[in-house]
Image (cartoon, rainbow, N blue to C red; front, side):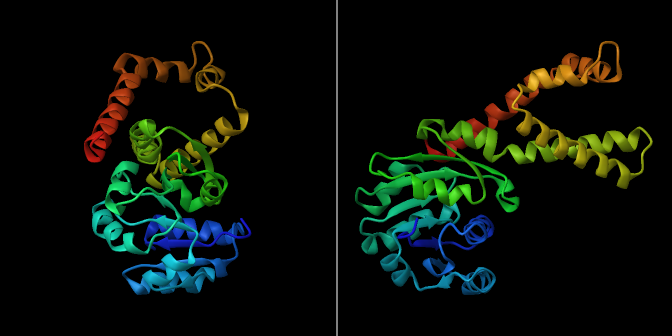
Length: 266
């Protein structure tokens, strides 16, 4: 990564999280990270925090060998048409949900190395699961992977899998937050104070997720490890089975996948 210069277009929440990750983990020196946002105050604040350099759009495009496009999907058309005349052979990395590689190429009007990435909210605590899909012109995946390894784990998938990735991993944090809220509510109903119930639900989910990741065991095996025959956990799991919780989760993920397909036109 010594010779890489990274231009970041869009200094909103996710763009800022990735820049912080790059700076904190010394992916490239801050002086080789260039920032642009139509809201100059956002770019300035991120520059002050991380040491990355603010640049005008043309300067950023000229000086960057890798471009991270972190704007809202609805802004993709205008932005890509704006930058098209200034792009040469840079690798363009997009975190714009639902904007396909073909769409990006079409808007740029030329063939270029393009990668799509789907990080999730856990990037803010360097625990994201980011999936990337690259077209055949991306010959060197290492800089793209390094970009997102600064905020968590990275794996490569085919672009055809991106809608399913969005449904499971991209939207996934909300499912866990929903479960945490439901667990806390149940704790209150069972007689706990609100503060105690929220703290127990939050740490139980956080600790269990950490154990799942560290153990490497199959989730179903861990269910059995907690649930002893005739015990309290088994009583709760019986209700989950009777109410069809697995079916509900599967239907929810499929609904999210369908919506992602609608947005991307796939």
